[in-house]
Length: 112
Image (cartoon, rainbow, N blue to C red; front, side):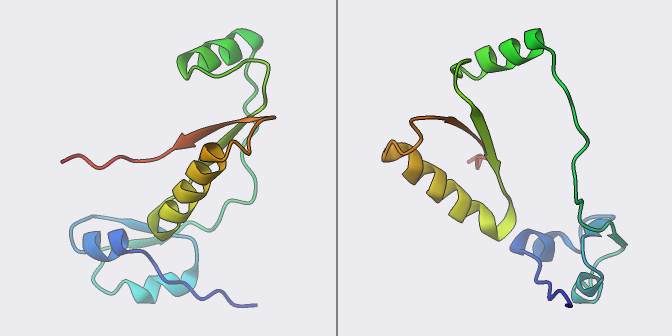
């Protein structure tokens, strides 16, 4: 199966202004003709396991005002999918559908 890649608005806007753009799929390289340099990085298939000790876990949960007794889901996204992810998380929280877990939403805010 071949991937069809369409990069987001941020890539289009910054293609001429940045030194390097990193892409996950080879097909994306030809779709950014105005970029100075494009590097094929691939898509990560697994994350490095980062074990936190109990003190580090407690400190992080305190920092973000999380309940230490509940599991935590970290949600994040970018580009064109970010709005859909953010809207879904807000809907889950507003309908109180996350009673057995808590959500930490990582998102970028717009500065005016």
